[in-house]
Image (cartoon, rainbow, N blue to C red):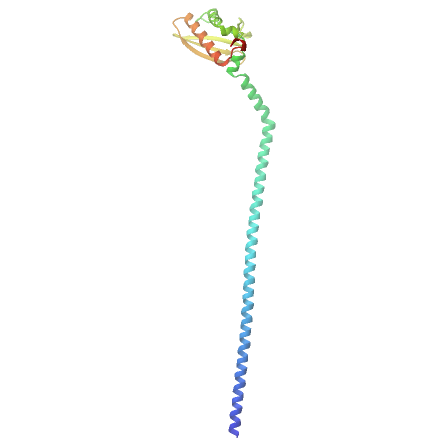
Length: 216
């Protein structure tokens, strides 16, 4: 009886120990699962937090670039406007004066607007003979041109120089000293040279000066 009781007691203790062991394993597993769950949540939280930080950094960088570009564009527009204002205020009048000066001294315009001509006396050709040859062309009368004996009263002055058989002539606007026409003829004497010079001058004026409407 004592042996049987001892065996039963030992079996009961074993069963209780096994039950306690199983219970402990269940508790340990449950604690481990909860620990892993907590760690997973913390990891997800950290990942999400890192992603938010990265997105925020990118947004801040893009915003900084946008503001920098806008500021640079504003500065460029300001400098452009300053140049435009400076140009319009200080350079428009200068440009207008230059354009007016250029238009007034244009050789073609001078030839078109001339009415009086002075042939400068020289030792190479007879000035009056050159006047005679010019006056023979009908265009001379149609353009209402006339000769004057005072260079200060002339719109155009004709000068002639010679080198060997080369007769070089210049048509000059006396007020500005602008040469509006220039050329050369080859002649054996002054008479032939005067005739050829007159022909070239009339031809040059035809290129820039139209005949009156009723004369065309």
